[in-house]
Image 1: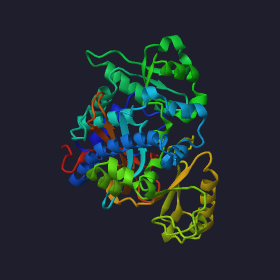
Image 2: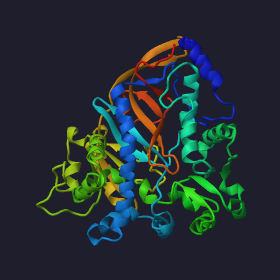
Image 3: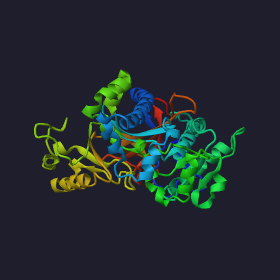
Image 4: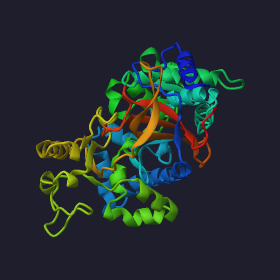
Length: 442
């Protein structure tokens, strides 16, 4: 196909049911190509991140029993309602882990940098549609044409999807996904449900893929009834009802000097070294003063007041809320230090420190995205122009039920204009599936 034919095909393939509700992006005739080393790195990250998440779960429960690390659970439970803390600790799902994992990766000059680790990700249906559509145009997408659908089916063989009002923007793509699964022969029919259209009796015996955040429980109809039914094993939820696993704090705790013995003991050397390569150094924004003879490791400062006075080069740092918040997703809480004036940076630090009791923030090293060129369709000239870009990669790893082997099922690339500091879905960006270098179709 020519580039113009591909754009025409893309437009023709857009589902009529509104899969991309309120979403708009720049089209491209080409999937995003990753070199061999980057594909290998991303494939290796799946098992490493799964091992890391298993260790996070273990560390949380260890810290409930060991006084010397009791601060870990206190930190992760900070600001959460008592019922959410009780759900974290419920013995029935103590060992349960999410069966889909999606890191947000910034493509850099020397690999990738993890900015977030999401176990309740959006974009599953979107990436499935992109893979299917670009594969139909002859492009060898990573995961294959049906990889996202196959991955979801293996990880969630029986689950219905329950979507809250707060997560309603994702309903069309989940309906597309479930329709694709229901069209397969031999499978049990599934549905996409909304809590406001249900009664507790209708849910008895259900296995539910939970598409709502635990911080939003107060706004989820039937929440109390559903949680009681889950505790009595009348229904089951995945991901498990563990708010502590959904915190960005873990990315900072990975670098905590007090926890290095734990990570060294529980993670393999291979996994630990890979995570050190990909997780940016981070710190918990705790306002508690440290002793005058101590410094924050890697920052070489004794107080956050010193950080306020840093010059632009020293402010190559990112601030973000850890997670249990309505602004904990979509980059809405992110402040980039060198993109702010010194006064603005000081105000962002003050806000983060003041928020510690109810919603801790983390600070991370800012890793600049690699500048690449990718063809973007220009309607005015009816042809492609090369757009100077920086890229966020979102690989989707599914864990088949009753298995410990992660399955990379697709990679969504958000290709943003190069002048954007924060990489996320926007109307000026391209949303593309990924292929390996040399895999473009004809």
